Length: 392
Image 1 (cartoon, rainbow, N blue to C red):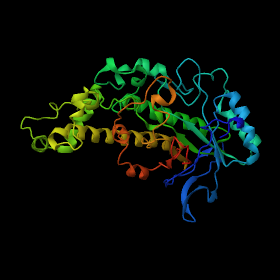
Image 2 (image 1 turned 45 degrees about the horizontal axis):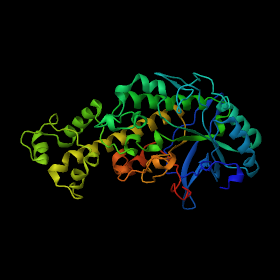
Image 3 (image 1 turned 90 degrees about the vertical axis):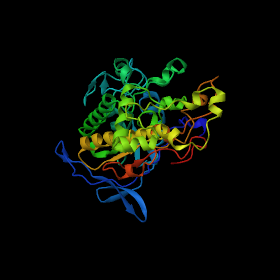
Image 4 (image 1 turned 180 degrees about the vertical axis):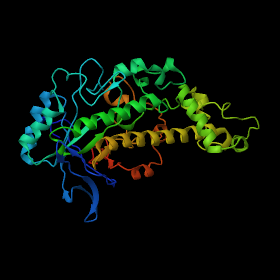
């Protein structure tokens, strides 16, 4: 976009969706809320509000900024956009990912803190402005599940632990482990609380659904800095449980590892091969021998299972809180689209990594086709690429 337009490069969002299962529409404030589904229409997946197919050109303003919202939105109201994305205000003093609905270990469907300086005071204020200026517009709630700073500070034992913490960037390690039941349970609880808040608003009949930008938009932060293996004891437990579930018997495990003494407890997490010395890393063959590579393969399968489990967990919490058909979209499962999330993109003086772990494999977001069959999972929302800014 032209810099003269006053619009941010991240402003325009495009809706792409898969099929969503049917639920019963609840009654809120005496009024039945619309059922929102994706169905085939003229050969294409299309959003239906009730039985009406709707075209949804969409706009996603930086809605937590009062100045940006009030400056940018008048440029779009006259065009009668189909749907606008709005984000909950962020309170000050609890980190970039602070939210009014999650503070420490407390999650609530009523705000726990006021909006920070320079922000619109509430989702109500954003929605009311949209409806006043574009009465037929629909709304999507955009949010993420990165934990606030006070939760991170209280739960350091729930975070990713690299093989060598002394060589890791601190900011990339403030990332919950995929094996952390405490974090993922709280994230699911937060999603449900936010949905309950929105579904109870007077303007809920204009809400099509929820766009969950996940944690770091699905990209695992330690991986972005080259750390692949999580050494948190909880991940070690999850890895051992995966070995037990996969092999079933000691005989099968020992045959796979070609080790007559192997047990789930004796098999160590794989090493960070790309973090080894240059001579050692260069000796790592592209095609690995089976037994030597078995722990790495099993660990990656464990990560995949956890990624699937967590996304389903969050989807179920979101769907259950809505209690009706709504769109539940994710900005995730797009990890090959490197760009903003590489340190060299934003940080002056920081080089792009000369090597990089596989992003799909490292996050566990491989083999994801079954996720699209999860009841409530409506689809993905993301650009096609980050370099040319292609439409999603």
